[in-house]
Image 1: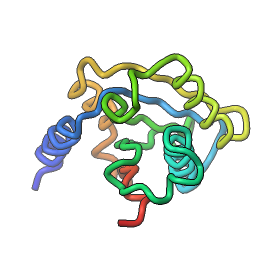
Image 2: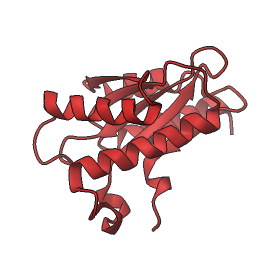
Image 3: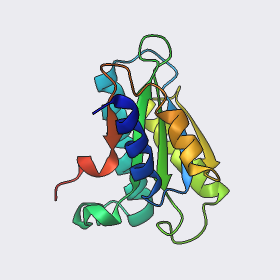
Length: 152
């Protein structure tokens, strides 16, 4: 299968997940791809804890947890993650400034201070997904699906 067809199918599949927001998570320091993935995993857990509480989060079914589809980028110069996530309909209310601040605090905790987090509503989900998959053709390019971190 040609990579362009595979990328197009991936964009369509991700667009149908019901994602409502775009995120950029930057550790603002050099880290390996493996470390960046571990940071993202920890971020997903912290977001679940923020929404459901520390004691109940491990009892949640994977489908009830934070859903994000992410790609690493610029691993040799400015490693960061671009993601789309489902917050509308998952959070009990519309994403507030307090929620955004809490998510940013989760990322800062995981990066031990220097990290930055950027939010944007996905008004053009397919366009954002096309943007975050721009390095799809890189031989070592991989996606990260937040539900892959949880036992089934």
